Length: 91
Image 1 (cartoon, one colour):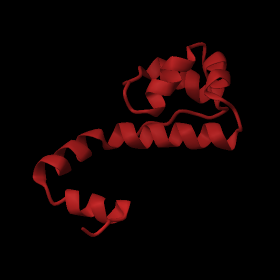
Image 2 (tube, rainbow, N blue to C red; image 1 turned 90 degrees about the horizontal axis):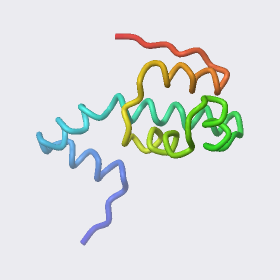
Image 3 (cartoon, rainbow, N blue to C red; image 1 turned 180 degrees about the horizontal axis):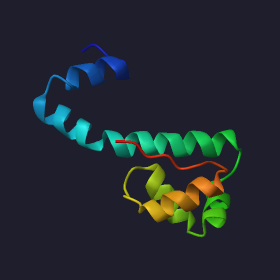
């Protein structure tokens, strides 16, 4: 059995219509979580510190970063402020 890299595995799975549909539906959440993680790590702050700045809990930040939580715009604004960023949404 040949081992696949993640990219190879991902490309192969995108050929499956069901997987492709599920991926497309979760893309926004994935990108949001990646942006928050990147900004938080760039600022060298912990989830706990970001939670304190955003007036929420570390558990909420963790769930958001794991794409298992859909936050309100109000929470995203608080998180953005906690990261020293401006929230921008486009359609």
